[in-house]
Image (cartoon, rainbow, N blue to C red):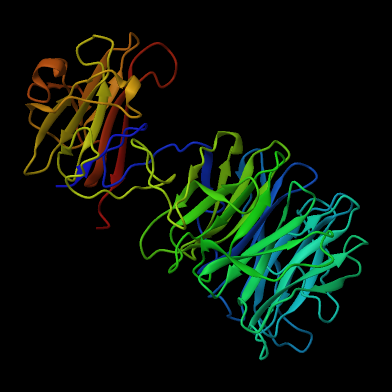
Length: 512
């Protein structure tokens, strides 16, 4: 009999969905993946204001069929995924595609960088351009030998127009096996020069740099390592030279990160705050790139993978994050950075969420007999919340209907003490007022009076007798010809004619 928790959004289940400070929207870029696996998202705002996302997808990472796919979001809706690049060579051989990176320079067309090759040690870089904001793409152009392009994360553009990309290479036999470098173009991506970074033989094995703009005019780069921590390096000459790569206190489980400097000068880092695995997925915030504070946990599910994030700030000031969701889908999250509530970290420990909030924008797992609960709602596996002003005193009670044993019943949790001092709703212990039934739904009439229905039955005296005394409606309880599941009835004025209609939602159960 799982215990439930009440948060800002009331939901009874094994976890809760809570609105976190700064979290605006969370969605999948596509609901059905046309191929089994996807990974390594990237996102940008095109010149026409549309969001453009890209990722690689195919049978599995490293398989020859893995190609580059894109989608555009216009007016809040994502277009279907479109394959825009694949690894078929002139001789017929086919290699997998890797790590797309989208970049919109201040002048010129939208750029799509990606890699092709049998593996990250032997891959090579390519560039495609879009003259119509990501709707279509021109022919691929291979980058010069020794230039791989931005290896995972977006480039930045300096005040003089120079494009600076964080890049890296793998498989070195001398020094760290992974080594970062930077690539600079002064002609909008036509030609490039490579900038090495000091990495001692015993230094961190680091790849996939992101670039931040410091308040003093310098640059900082952070990214992924094999050394269980995020790396950092600094440039005081606009990227011409860089300090020795050092490790920060932030954990890194050998998983991709990304970072961005906001318009107000603060920095955001999206990463897995763990030494092992690729969950949780965290957002940290910093004023100087050195001291980082906890901002949000976007995902947290044991043994799941939420990885390879990308992050940028759009012209309207909102922050957009995309990432791999369990290697099956690509997720897009929108954040309002002005509403983020930062919490200090002690060392590398992620702080606990304030009382009354989940620590993420998703599901929060709770143990039995949680001492932080204001009221333990032990009401069974199947539980329908029916929040309403039951007694007309202007305060909402929470009514929970549970049809299952051992806690079958309708339970009323009356509004409790002053909630001004509590960051979540407070209710008195529950009182059972009747039996519980399946498929109970709450409606309201034109005057705001609650009306409670189960299939074919209304309970006009629900406030006093709960679900004990029902009045049959002049309609069949099973309007579906087959056995149904989730047979839910609701009163609405469906066609706006001022008359009450009945809406019935059912699910076909014959396939089970």
